[in-house]
Length: 218
Ligand SMILES: C[S@@+](CC[C@H](N)C(=O)[O-])C[C@H]1O[C@@H](n2cnc3c(N)ncnc32)[C@H](O)[C@@H]1O
Image (cartoon, rainbow, N blue to C red; front, side, top):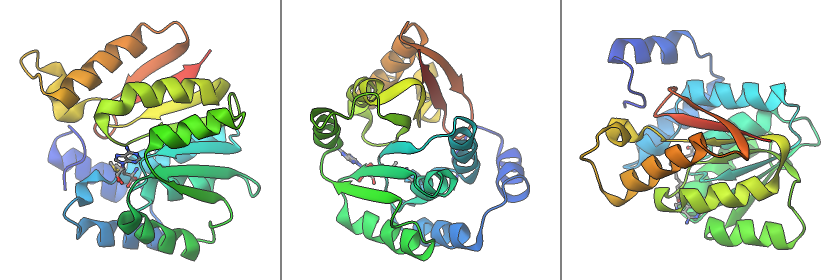
């Protein structure tokens, strides 16, 4: 299953030789690959990148928008300290039931709180509950047309110096094609440009996986 724009052999080298995974992570990848939507899972090197970032900034509180079968949450939660907390947002009970099984097996249930429902509602509830500035790290990986709204909410929820990562910002290369104008491509292309010029953050588009836009809140 292709997850990056790298030549296939290079992608395989990165995945198979340069990205050690636990037996549990490998089993989750194998189970997810059997699902019709299995390609939505982040790549293993993206998971390693997020774990590294979480450890580098000493994150204690993290937020995820788009959990699916739980691979990215597994990577982030494992990198948080023992008293760290990850809030996961998703709408699918079926997919997150798979995630819960693996989090449970990894001993991460105390660290992860899953909130089922439209993520915009969950983010608004977090803000209403006084959550502004209380998160160190946020990962956005859900429905693309709401990415801008997720970014704006995360900018409020993340502290100064905290990080926001957004997946699929290259959208299989579509954002680079000036003739591609479907709803998701237009939304992601516009958000890339907005974040590039956004004085509220330092931003960099990483070409890992399908493109990870990484922003540090000023
Ligand atoms: C690309 S997948 C996430 C992949 C996941 N990060 C991983 O590592 O496997 C996108 C997820 O976003 C969820 N989603 C879609 N629309 C949503 C919404 N409005 N609110 C919350 N979650 C949503 C889907 O149910 C799906 O599980």
